[in-house]
Amino acid sequence: MPTFPFAILFLLGILIYAFRILRNAHARVDLLRSIPTVGPSGVLSSYIGAFKYIFNARDSLQEGYDKYRLNPGVFKIAVLDRWVVVVCRPDLIMDVKLAPENLLSFHDAAFDILEGRYTLGSSVFKDPYHFNIIQGPLTRNVSKRFPAMFREAVFALAKEIPLVHDESLEISVWNMTLNVACRTSTNFLLGHSLCRNSDWLALNIKFAKDVAVSINIINLFPDVLKPFVGKFMTPLPYSVARAVKHLSPLFAERMARMKDADSDAGEDDLISWLLSEACNGPPSRRTSQELTLRVLSVHFFAIYTTSMMLNHALIYLAYNLDMFNTLREEIEQCVQKHGGWTKAATEDMFCLESVLKEVMRLAPLNGVSVDRKTVNDYKFANGLCVPAGTMLSIPVYNVHRDETYNPRAETFEGTRFMGQKMTSATPQHLAWGLGRSACPGRFFAASELKMLLAHILVTYDFRCERETMPELRWFSQRILPDTTTTFIFQKRRI
Ligand code: HEM
Image 1: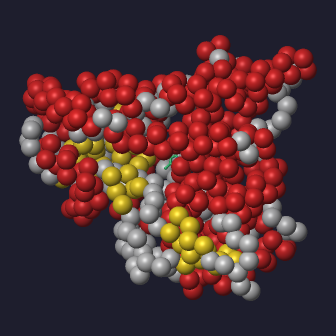
Image 2: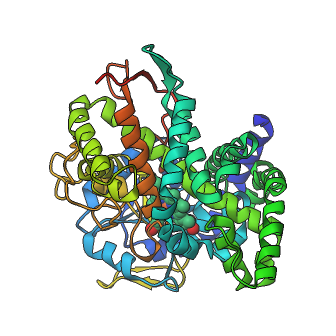
Image 3: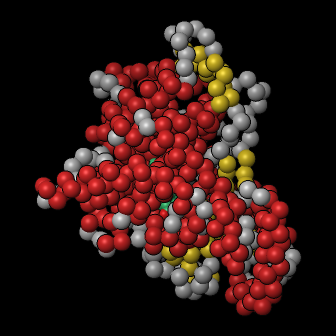
C-alpha cells in the first residue's frame, strides 16, 4: 500500500473534520456535557485524547474506569470520528443488555465499528439473517458434525506440527493456530472437500487478515474520507471473485437438488442452511455474489476469533505448566468415559472449560465491546440521557480485571471458573458480548476450542523459551493476536 498518498489523505481528513467538528461542536458537547471525559474535551484538544487512544487505549480506559466506575458509572472518550460513551456501572450495563434493537442498535454499531460497507459488505449488517442460521441449525449440528471435525483437527495439527520421532520443532504459534482453526472450521461449515482445498484455505486466511487490517485503518479516517480509503482498502472485490469460483458450482448443484426434490438442499452444512434461509427471503439474497459474501463473512467471524483464543490459551498454559497433569488426566478420562472424541466428552472437561473461560477473561477480543448505537435520544433508568447516534460500549477488559468481581484479578487462575459454563455471557464475563446480541457462534466455538486445546495437550509437550510471558498488544481498543511467539513442540512423553 503506498503510504504517502494515505498520509496526505489522512492530514486532509483531519483538517476537513476539524472544521466540521467546529461547526457542530457546541451541539454535540452540550448534549454529552454531563458525562465526564477522559482526556481533553475541547473541540480541537479532544483530538489529543483521540490520538492517545490509538496507541494507549488501555491506560485511557483504566483512567476512566478508576475515576468514574461507580459515580456516575459512565465516562466518555474521544476516538477520531466520534465520542464513545463507556458504560461501567452494573445497573447501567443491565440497561444496555435489556434495551431492544430499536433503541440501542447492535447491528448499526457493528456496521460502523467493523466498517461494514468496505469490509464485509452492507447487506451482511442490514439483513443479518446469518445470525439466525448460526444460532439455529449451525449450533444444533455441532454434536453430529463433531467427529468429522475432530478427524480434520488431528490431520491439521499433524500437518502444522510435523513431528515424526523424538525431535523438537520450533513453531510459530499464531500461524499454527490460524491454519488449524481455518481448516477445522471449514470442515464443519463446508465439509471435507473445501477444507482440503489449499486455495480455499489461503483465500479465507487472507480475507480474515485483510478484513482485520482494513477495519483498523479505515477506523482512523473521518467519515468524509472513508469512501476514498475504503476503495483502496476493501478486500471485497478480489476475495468474492476468488471465492465465487469455488462456491458457485456448489450453489448451483444444491439449488437444482432443492428444485428436484422440492425439499431442502440436503447435507447439513452452511450452504444448505444459507440456501434454505435465502429462499425464504428477498431474491437479492440468492445471487451467487451475495451467498458467497455470506459464506466469507461467517468464516471471518469464526476463524479469526477462534485462532486468537487458541493462541492466547496456549501461551497462558505454556507459563502455567503445573496445570498440564490435571488437564491431561481430565481429558483422557472424559474421552474414555464417552468412548471417543465426542462433543459430550468435551462437555465433561470442566477444568479445561475453566481454563478457557479464564483466558477469555484476561484476553478478550477487544478492550471495549458490547457496542450499541443509540437510534434516538436514549434515557437510562436513572435518568441519564445520551443523544441519538451516540456509540455506547462496555469496558470488557477493565470489568474482567475488577477486583470486586474477580479477586486476584491480574493473576491467571486456571480453576477460577470450575463448574461454570464457558458459554455464559454475563455482565461480569463479557468475552462473548451480552444479551440478545451475544455471540451466536459461541456454542460451536467453545466445542471447537475445547477439542483443539484438549488434543494438543494430550498429544504434544510444548514450551516457550522466552523468560516472561509476552504482553497483550493493543491497537486502539483492539487486542491484537500475538504473531511473534514461537513454541518448542515435541511428541508427548508419557
Ligand atoms: C472464541 C471465539 C469467539 C469469540 C471470543 C467471539 C466473540 C464475539 C463477540 C464479543 C461478539 C459481539 C457480541 C456483542 O456485542 O454483544 C460476537 C459477535 C458475533 N459472532 Fe462471535 N466470537 C467467537 C466465535 C464465533 C464463531 C465461531 C462464529 C460463527 C460461527 C461467530 C459469529 C459471530 C457473529 C455472526 C457475530 C455478530 C457479528 C456482527 O454482526 O457484528 N463468532 N462474537
